[in-house]
Structures are given as structure tokens and as C-alpha cells.
Image (cartoon, rainbow, N blue to C red; front, side, top):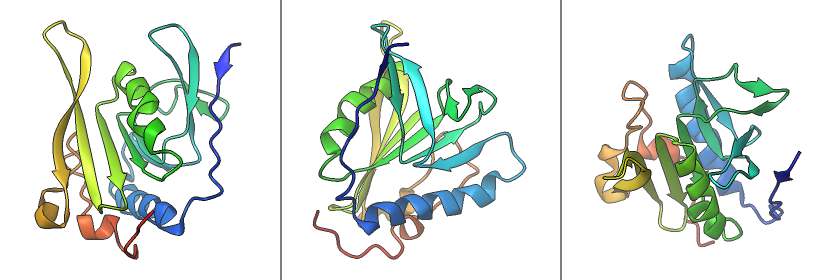
Amino acid sequence: MDLDLQILDMAGARPEHSTVIVNFVAAVRKQLMNSTCYVYSDNVQYRFKTDEGENKAVIPDASINCRIKSRRGGTFIDAPRFVMEVLSDSTEEYDRGEKKELYRQQEIDEYWIVDLRKKQVEIYNLDYDENSQPQYYLWKVITHDNKDELEIVHFPNVEITFDELFAEVEDYSG
């Protein structure tokens, strides 16, 4: 089996990084109880086949998956509907580049990039271009100034506020 794993040094991850993930999972989990969807933190692996036929494994910071039966052991083999990545200095290029492209190829409906330095959330929505190819479009950038507009687009009945997401996160400079 050809499994192209990318190992990143996470030793420098800051507590603020984990705090945002925990805040998201805690707020969303309660609302998904008794549904067919589950929210997972950064301990769940997904395995995908790229458009080029390569097998790739990724561990998103947070995901909402409604296809939980699609797995082999502890690894999901079908795409979640939502993924969130919290940027850090060591992962920003990967999260904005290769990982985002892989999520696009898997047609993951919604992708959030949380930037701790700017205290903002970029919400990308999947749509199809004129050639019926999946593309991510920046739907909205949420900052303190428009924090009331934060929403999980593809889960409109699940709410998390900007203040909940960034609770207990001090000013972060990287």
C-alpha cells in the first residue's frame, strides 16, 4: 500500500492552538448529540486517494463526519463534510496549500482556516466551476468586527460564536 504520510514537527504547538480545537469540539458536540454526525478533534485520521491516484492520510484539527461507518480500524476512508485547521507557524503553508487542495479533491463541503495571530476565521465553501470541477470559494472572513456572522454554513442548526471559539485564547503572536 502506497501511503504518503507527511510528518510535521508539532512540538512547538502552542496551548492556544489546542484551546481553539477543544472550544470548537465542545460547542458542536452537544448540538450533534443523537444525530448521525459526529465532531472529532485532531486525533482522527482520514485516508484519501488524490486525483493523481496517490494515497494520502491527514489528521484535521477538527472535522464533522456524517459517514462514520466508512472506516478501516481507526482510519476513516470517506470524507467528512466539514474540516477546520488552526494555523501554526509550522503548518500554515501545508494547511493553505496541499491540505486545502486534498480537501477540495475530496469535495469536503466546508473548510475553515483559523488564524490565531489575526484572530480570524476564513470560511471556504465548496462549489463547482463552469467545468463542473469542485472549487473552494472564500465565503467570508470573520473577525472581531463582524463576529456575529460566524456560522457553520453546511450545518445551519449548529451554532458556535466567535467568542466561544476564541474563549481563553490570549493575544497570540505566533
